[in-house]
Image (cartoon, rainbow, N blue to C red; front, side, top):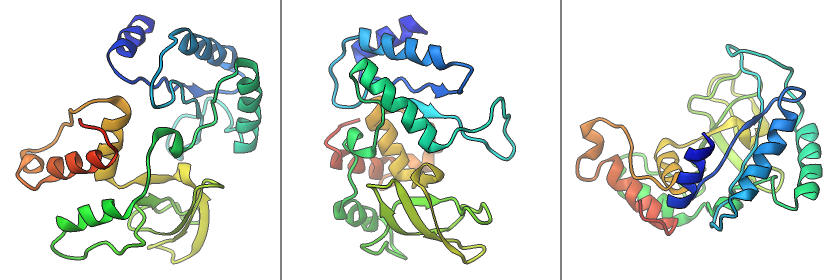
Length: 211
């Protein structure tokens, strides 16, 4: 894995994104940070982005989920120790919400165009755990939260942006940008003229990146 990371770092932008399991791999996380820094790689996006372990209803639970306060507290200490940024936001990946993205998507939507205040995410309702067709009412980047209205229970609430899924077309473009790839497994209808791949190629151009 180490050799693969070294090779990938020579060919493209790389992000190493391990999951922190408190009490299990604390020292391993530090080793990974040290390895990432040893690559001495200059790139426009972060080289390392450590994830917090989150519990899922049907997933395995090797440990208890740490609070975000605990997570950020520990990583603030690691930032001071290693003199590198570990607490990231979307600004670190040069990802911006712009009216040009909405206009571009609407160019290919013959019915139900997106309004100018549309947010390209599906947030998970913290009340009933529904994620389908929920409306993101307001995104608070500073506090990393989204206010939503649930399509199932009708409740308005707030949740972390970590509990929101990016619109799939924008997810394609974002992943192409972050991982510097141009490959996506899809049905041939997505490759048709004016199809998903064409749209995503134009979306990624908004990010000033050619897949």
